[in-house]
Length: 189
Ligand SMILES: N[C@@H](CCC(=O)N[C@@H](CS)C(=O)NCC(=O)O)C(=O)O
Image (cartoon, rainbow, N blue to C red; front, side, top):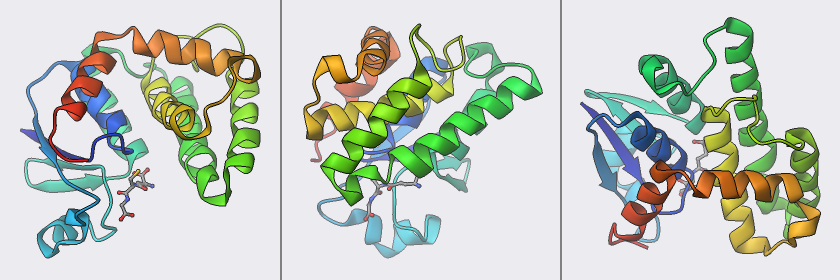
């Protein structure tokens, strides 16, 4: 059994979406970042970084969004969340590394910096839908960061046409709608 520790709206939303895409039963364990549950000794024993997401594979902890998405995509190939060929898989990892190392930390520097960084992401994504051509875990990771950016920066559609088109494609997916509903209902902030 897989267990996902998540906080509503946090980075853990990406593996949460992937798990719903896969459609296998899993346990979803909400934690409150506001109440610092990620700093409790029991949680730190599983993830010394004190962050979400955390995926337990049986009892074995796996952390970092990109690592968890890669694991899920490879473990459940029937969900078609990653290309089959090695170059395609490397491109998925490349996109997820960019999302984790460039998009995720942008807000900490400031909203103006984030606006500039996401303009670069819009150019990188380009016109025409999914990051790798077909839908993949790279889209899930990208979506969560842009979804968050929309929430705090309230960007104008015309400045990010490709990312907004991608956002609309993602919002139409049942797995995304299910994740947003589950996280809203989770009972923590
Ligand atoms: N590099 C990590 C970042 C995870 C991360 O920053 N998680 C945040 C929520 S979005 C968190 O758990 N913060 C709690 C804290 O720092 O106390 C990943 O990609 O999984």
